[in-house]
Length: 204
Image (cartoon, rainbow, N blue to C red; front, top):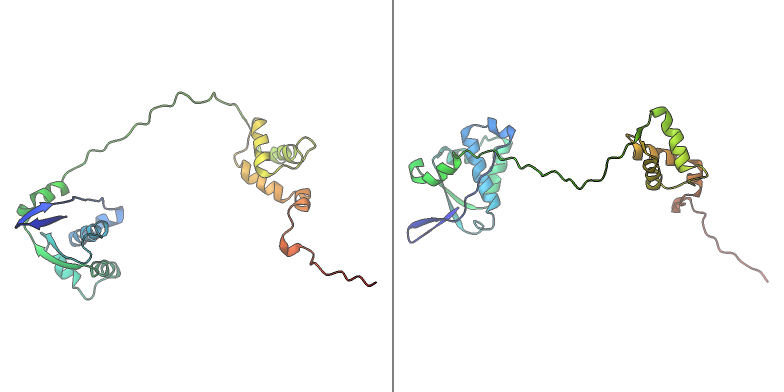
């Protein structure tokens, strides 16, 4: 994006994006149009209400926009551009050396390495529980006399404190609590199940 002052063009901002996998198979003209739509999207506050000139070395874009039998994707892009006062002009690649240089510049792949955190707590050894033993462990941690019908999060905490490892601990505990008769009896009564209140008349 740039602006011409005193017949001299001054660049203001450079922007770029990476095509997703599906867009890589587009023809060159559609790729060029994607760039224009992308530019108007991120610089939306600048071109609104002003006349904007788009310089490109691919002038066929101008005729692609005016194509009547376009597909749905192209129509959607054209509708996005109709909000702005856009004029497309041709400019040779020699006259846009900076933009061409940035568009062909290959970026090095940089991988950030996260440093190792040596302040971790010591390792804990848990016993992996078989499926046949899950119900018994949940019974002792949830509904035995030692732990009197705790809620799901507390029961799961007790299981972990007992050094047992259940792959689906929270899912199993939630299902166990739903099937616990005593928990269902003493649970909160919904408004739909409340007894209706009636007036009591006293006759003297």
